[in-house]
Image (tube, rainbow, N blue to C red):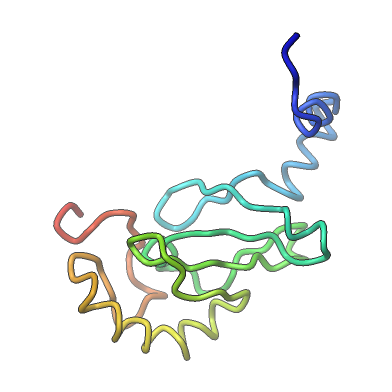
Length: 135
């Protein structure tokens, strides 16, 4: 007999209206400015912390502030990753990161990842999941 994960079983037992309400409050994936749909990690919520979105930094260009869930009540904790998917910054305040932390990250990473875009103003730059060469 095949075993169903408990979470999937519980979700499948909800009627359509409850399931769509849950999806609106706590979406499984968030669409980032690059167009990618990235899975949210709600595991930290079990300990009262914010959900986590691990995303490459270049895919967030254009976002002026951190995304929110639960009808805008909960800021998502962003794990901003390098092109090699290594952590560069963890923030729930993207606007502050763009203003204060990004210039240093940009300075350090431009030499390390020259094929990837590192614009001076990431809030107006086009988000991408690709290198400069392939864009």
